[in-house]
Length: 137
Length: 108
Length: 126
Image (cartoon, rainbow over the protein chains, first blue to last red):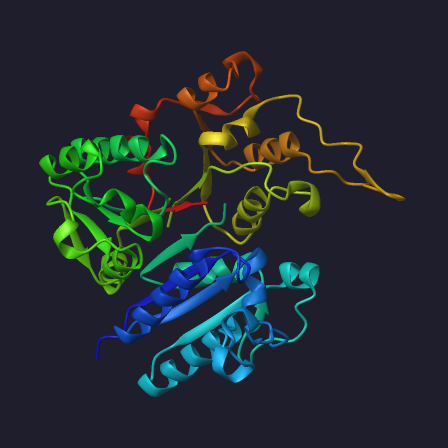
C-alpha cells in the first residue's frame, strides 16, 4: 500500500487579524479531504489559534444572541480538523512554537496540540512531500 | 524540470510587486521551469476582464496557467461571466494538488 | 533538501522580539541540520546594511537590555556557512550602496533569481 502523501504548513498570523487565517484553515481542510496527511507548525501569533481561552460572543449590532451568532473561534476549527482526520484515518499534527507560546501566554490549548521548536518544523518538512510557509506581513 | 507555484494573495493594483512577480514567473519559464500562478484572496481582484492587467495575457502566452480561487472570486462579487479569459476559476483543492506535486511554492 | 528562505518584510516586531524572527528561525533550523540559505528582497534588503542600531528603547521605567542586532545576526549566519544574497535592484531603489553592505552578502540582480531558485529543493517565502 502506498503511504499517503503528507503536507506541512507553517502559519504565522494571530486569529482575527488577517484573511490568511481562514485561507490557511481552508487549505488544511482541503488537504485532509483529499486524503493527505497534514502537519502544522504554528509560529508567532499563530500559536494563539489553538487557545481554548478564546470565547465566542453575541452580536448586538446584528441583534444576534451568543448562540445565534455562533461566532467562529479557531480552536474549534482545529478540533474540527482533528475530528475530520480521525474520521478519515488521516494524520493531523499541530505543533506550537514553544517560545512563541511563552511570550503570548497561550497556556491552555486544544487537546492534541503539542509544544515544539523550529527543529520540529524542520523534521516535519523533511518528512513531508511539500511544505507551504504562509507568512505574515 | 523544476516547477513553481506562485501564490498571489495581494491586490495586484496595490503595489508594483505583482508586476515583479510576473517578471519572475516569465524568467523561471525562460529558464526551463514550469510555473503556475494561483490568485487567492485579494489577488483575484485582477481577474475581471474589465481590469487592466496586461501581465496575465503575457503569462498566458508563455504557457503559464493562471488559476483563481472560486471562493475568493465569489466573495468579491466576480462572477464567472466577468472573469478574463486568461484566468481559470478553480476550487482551493487545486492549490493543494499543485503542492502535492512538489512544486516550489511561494506565497506572496 | 536544500532550502532558500526568502525574507521580504523587515523590522516587523523586531523590537518586541529582540530579533528578526525569520533570521532567528533560520539559525534555529540550520542548528537542526537544515542547509538553509537566505535571500533578502524588497524591504528586507535593508538587513544587509551596515551600521544598524536599535539601542535605547525605553518605555516608562523599562529599558531594553538586548535590542535586536540585525547586522550581528546576518554576520553570524554568514559565519555559520549560510549563503546570504540581496537583490541589487531593491538595494538601489532604497539608495543602499554596494559599499555599505555587510561583508559576505552577495548581490544578485533580479535576472539571476531564476537561476538561484533552481539550486534549491524548497523555497520558503516569508
